Image (cartoon, rainbow, N blue to C red):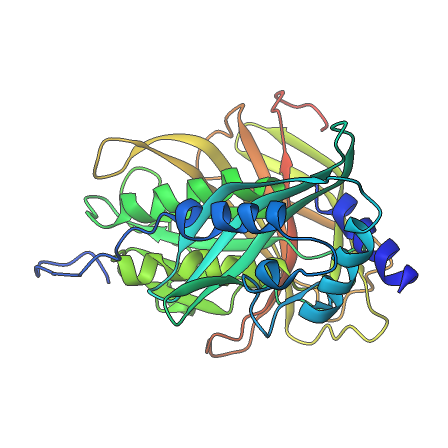
Length: 374
């Protein structure tokens, strides 16, 4: 039990959160839920009125299948008992940060739990990101992140390849969501914007491979193809992204050097498989130069972001990855000062069937200085 308590407190420290077409659509939006009122405020009240000897009112807010980094509901109750029994008049704060409704019975939340003594000394401070919520019998319950992995092991970054088009009325909703997910997950979430036609469009093999000839379309981690921008489709993004973020990374990346001159970029990168049994069959290295804020506009007159202006694919299925991989390619326009280089390895079966797995990735800021080495 002592080992479990130490492990739980270590977790506390480590956790420091359809196409554009000419037809009318009538999609019923999800009803808004006040998760603070329905779950988190009552949870805080239960914490502050319960005792270490009787945590039943608190545990009533936890689903029977609760699992957070391998800790089950009963184990979490035992940890709370041992933690709270050593504090006189504990003060517990439950703070909801964000919550995203996925459908009528499922949601994702980021929230904070702090436990202090009567002198306001903080004993525990946990940040829960990607907490899964489920509504059962009219009541919202906590399910943890449903992950049984070691929180100290590196998890993968999520790559989204997004396709838009000029005049696409559904696209801004997807773009706003991608921006929000980027703000929420920071460097762990990377998206690339491809324009089918317009000022920043170019003939990319991506469209044919994914059969992405209309917009909006997003392919998440090479495994989840989402078409359209209605509420039902949008609600799938947070769940898929969070699920992918919980998976362990199978590849580590580093940019050894990157030199930009006009429209040209060259350099080398190091890929390190994190498993001795990693299979390189059908593996390619993707490199993309993105313009973080493009001059191209969407249907609402907003600037497109993370727009791909140049892309290179290198077959590395038989490459010795103990050595760096050199690259050299050209963008379609002069590479701007706010550009970034995105790299990721990917399985590429001959026919795409939600099976073109992306193995994490990296976004590397170029901070372009013409002819300079980055």
